Image (tube, rainbow, N blue to C red):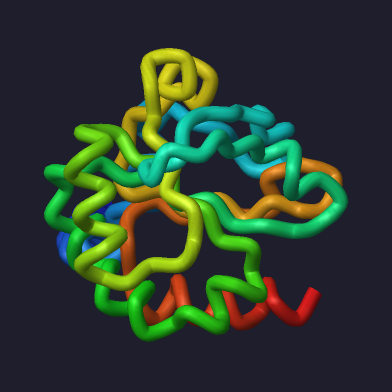
Length: 174
């Protein structure tokens, strides 16, 4: 019996660091498991929000109905969101093919400046109170890959350059 207890203790002592390392390397999975991250989940319909594009035009997601598209939900003071801008800036053709739209929480004028500074050609829609309510925004950035029927097929919380580019490349081939 003592021999078994010793092996059990050794096993437990070996598992704890392995699980800890896995958790550190997969924070998104752990966050989804234990936190309400808000927003739409995979398989749900994405709300057909409409709002004001930062350059003043009206924008309706309804205009993309029948096509797959990608929505990035961002916040103006989010450092992780800002770190994605160079990748977005260097992926203009890919974003155009993916029907990319950014929905931004924060100052409309600030997003207008971001669009100008990075020469973004995709629409940036100002997330007014109604859009924030409809999208249940909590986590920034969040990328939604939406099929032609308006269903969320893939959701990516946070920003990892390789993952975003891989998903965008796969998405444009659909």
